[in-house]
Image (cartoon, rainbow, N blue to C red):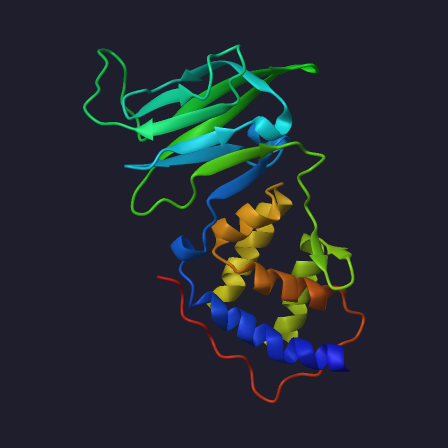
Length: 245
């Protein structure tokens, strides 16, 4: 009973906190992406955003691979650099926004494709990134490519229990059914977007950032989804939350 009462109190507080933190403030400097998604083998493919005045890194140091070659299909708005010569230890790609560069007969597009070829003792791999041009404040500085074996898709809850998106989905349905949150709340839509991203293979942290939902909310919903006890409904439904600006 104490466990359920704690849920009844903490969940609304965690959800309310979403509206008090803007994505820019909450965004980490480093985002992680699994190798399989970056290679286009799962999910919806990988993208990297570059903002004016702030370069973006793609870091392969966690995979133990070195970069042997890259192709940037439309180089009019982005230049590419590396932390070492290609084929001689390079493991970080640095992308920087530029203006005023034009190439005859080369169309200028609103986004482009970056192909990265890497090598390791296990052979050669090809990574594909849609390069997007961001506006406003940067959301991150480095996209770290993580081995699939290290790219955890679970969330540690309570006494070292590991939850997944199914637990979050179940917890969301229970929260709505027991009037812990209104079904029309914008937070519900954000959580549903988070679930769609994780079902397609995105890691939990970047999925939460992209969906603009706090990991505190995700964790609390997952905890409710793993609980075997049905919580008692609140006397009043949880009020609708305003959307993030």
